[in-house]
Image (cartoon, rainbow, N blue to C red; front, side):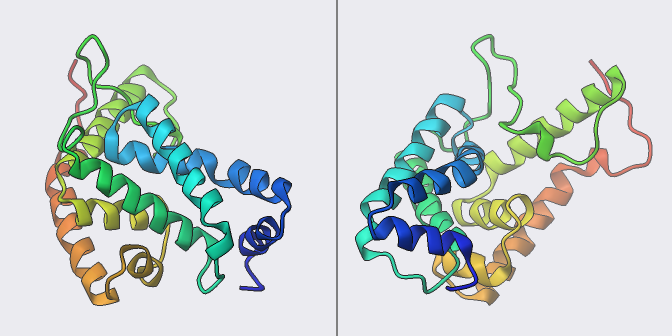
Length: 198
């Protein structure tokens, strides 16, 4: 796609420009780690999975065709790779936790709206982040993928349909079910004033 600078970089890499691949990695590497973290809840494994994704991109260069936005193609590779990881069973429905058993923070708290200015707001933000991570861990595979791609990565329904290799109507259905689950899971944070308990 001529209007997609990432696709142009991928085509340049296809032509032998290694710097173009490095630029793509610099642009999307952190987002890929964050995306993978939504699936495995483990910082080190998310880094490994993101590296695997870019290795697949590197190896697929000769076959690359810019029929969709590069970002859509990249997320298709990442989504398939992460879903395959989940199907191995090790990370399925595992709650995020540190070695001391305390729930860990998500990979990118900056992605959450607002900025905490008081200890109470910081505690509320961490509790909300934990609830979001717990919600994602409990969603079925395809619902989780659709929810993450739409709500956290900002892809359109059409792009998500391409990533998941399904129809737009199926994406809408997945997102509806995931949104209902999210509304129930995050209900404690929906009121105007919520008390943060230790």
